[in-house]
Amino acid sequence: MRKTLILCLFCVLASLALMFYELRVPAREPEPTPLVYAHIIADDIGTAAMQHKQGLQQAASELGVEIRAYTADKNAPQAKQLLSFLADIQKTDIAGIILSECDPNIARRAAEVSTEMGVPLAFLFEYDQPGAFSLSVDEALGRALAQATESDAPIAVLAGNGSASQRRLAGAKAALPTPPSLYESITALSPSQRGTQLLLLTPEWLLNLPAGSTHDILSIDPGDTRASALETGRISALAARMPYAEGYLTLSALHENALYGGPALPIECPVRVITRDTMYNSENVKLMFPLLQ
Image 1: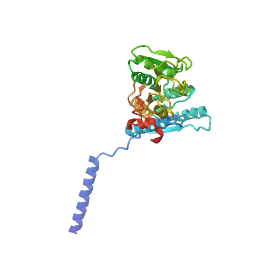
Image 2 (image 1 turned 180 degrees about the vertical axis):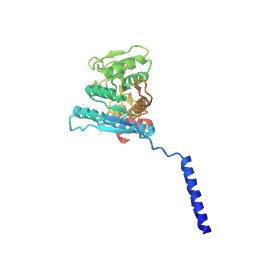
Image 3 (image 1 turned 45 degrees about the horizontal axis):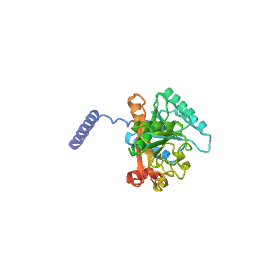
Image 4 (image 1 turned 45 degrees about the vertical axis):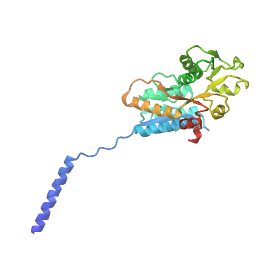
């Protein structure tokens, strides 16, 4: 009988102790749901698109947020798919929208959707849309090429009339101590100007330059021919974009805006000048040969 009473008393005391502990220890709050950002991709082909996504994912991992990708099927009408993505996004709870390069009509509709939803919008390309984030890289490319020239050599600039070429031209002119000779077409360029440094701001024209040109050519990254162009001396330097950094910085800026508000400013992106002597440096290999990464 005495043992039974002692056991009962022990159970009562244990129950009281447990109740006291539960009163003192607060219940664990549920983990907060991570913010989700929609990434609309018009064209998922190409190394820049791949590196953009890698940069976005790295930033998402560090910030504790998620990326929800909406990728257009290349075998179906693109504009219709992108508009459908935007309609679907309006029905979801997302913190912001990221739009890869696409038709201006889609960009304008994305701006309307972001305004209606009250969420920030970022373009992963240069696009002038009030209230939205966009990359700022073309002027930096032109400025970097100009800064890579030799100060005592005459300088000519070959730039088309496109908006990207004109932004690069503005960057180059701002960095040069004296105004350069300007050319808007290959036919206007004299191939006999030996020793002249030529800033090629429309890299698509590289293959069409006269074979006998004696210019020292510094070019915006010409794409898949970049390695052979440097190795053969066709160009002496190139200014390359850094798509991984562009993706990373874009999500970082968008997330900060989603949390704290503020103006949507241009996203200043780094660029890098690469020469034949530096193309195989470890920090440049991933830019020169992105498919190997």
